[in-house]
Amino acid sequence: MSIYSETNKKNLLLLIQLRWVAVGGQITTIAVAHCFLGIELPLAPMGTVILCLIGLNGVSLHRYWYQRALRNGELFVELLLDVAALTIQLYLSGGATNPFVSLFLLQVILGAVLLDPWLMWALVLTTSVCFAWLTSSYRGIGIPHTHRGTFLDLHIQGMFICFILASTLLVLLITRVHNNLRARDARLAELRQRSAEEDHIVRMGLLATGAAHELGTPLATLSVILGDWRRLPSLMSNPEIAAEISDMQVELERCKSIVSAILLSAGEARGEGTVHTTIRSFFDEAAREWKARRSPSQFSYTNGICSDASIVSDTALKQVIFNLLDNALEASPGWLGLEVDRQGGNLVVRVSDIGPGFAKEVLHDFGKPYRSTKSARGRGLGLFLVVNVTRKLGGTLSVQNAEGRGAVVVLTLPFDALSPGEDHGD
Image (cartoon, rainbow, N blue to C red; front, top):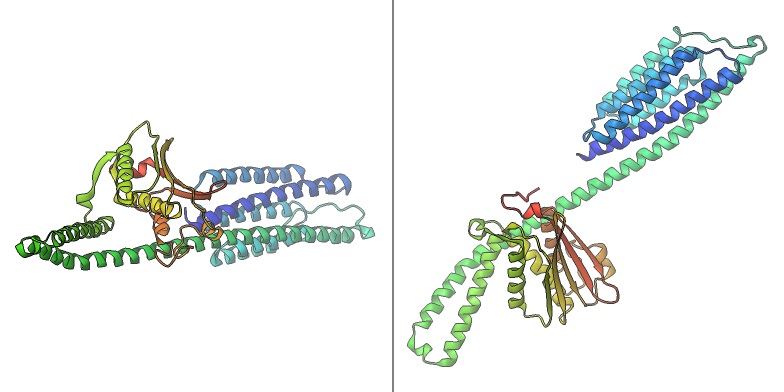
């Protein structure tokens, strides 16, 4: 559902609330005029109009709860029906001589706030025609003691009551509409921020893949040179040089695997990296691989998934887990933990440590780029990528400082996002 449709739904709810006020006001006014002022009114037709308004509110509430999209034109129809009900009530109670005829202006103001320009002017034209028609076509009402000036007194009193009613409703209306507009603007700002972040990810991905392609050629050249050196007896006869050449080859292979992983994460070698596995095997292998690479002092790993499920091994997800573990290890070299569990249809991954915890500004802006209390290296981009990959997979990420010491990061992902054949894109 679009932001504008969501705003229209909030405005429809506002119209429903104002209509309840109108129903209560009409019942009160008719009761006072008939019972206390002795004015003869056609109670049956006027009561029928009130019942129609109540029925209209019932239909509107059903649309509010069960209709996802709501167009601006539907608000126009709602206002037209309110204008029609007001016109009938005024026709039955004195037409344009009724002081409540100025409530047409309230309908116009509602239209000016809620409707598109052309619909607003259509509502202005409709209310003007109704007002003009009521000046000559209406059912007269019997005002007692008109020769004593009571009619003028009642008219002024009615105008005063109408003014108070219209003023109160306008204050409530403008306040609510202003809040709706602020909520819509906040949502638009959030979407713009998300778009900017995703654009940032695209540019970073292009930079990474470009660098990976550029590094491919010199790494291949170095691999050839090292291979030639291993075939030279003059070099291999020296044990120290031979050991250094072996170490260089190991590090070179590591660089090549890093470059391949970058390209794989960017989707340029996806066909080679797609592996069908199970959720338990995926995390067992990921935990084992990370532990072998980082060699932490104490690493507590718990896999609580009893009901296993088939998934597609996703390099991006593995990198998310590695980034979270790397951040925990940097904050807490002495101990960190990884817990994996299943809660209903969701996968829950919890990474905890006993470090100093997150600073308040990092907790407030968690996952935003360049929000980090570390040195210049990294600058918070690792967590930024974690948050956005999680969002792409339809999951959520929550962070909090543990009681006493340490921090806890909880990653929640729907199993459907990891199932074979699922499309994880937005």
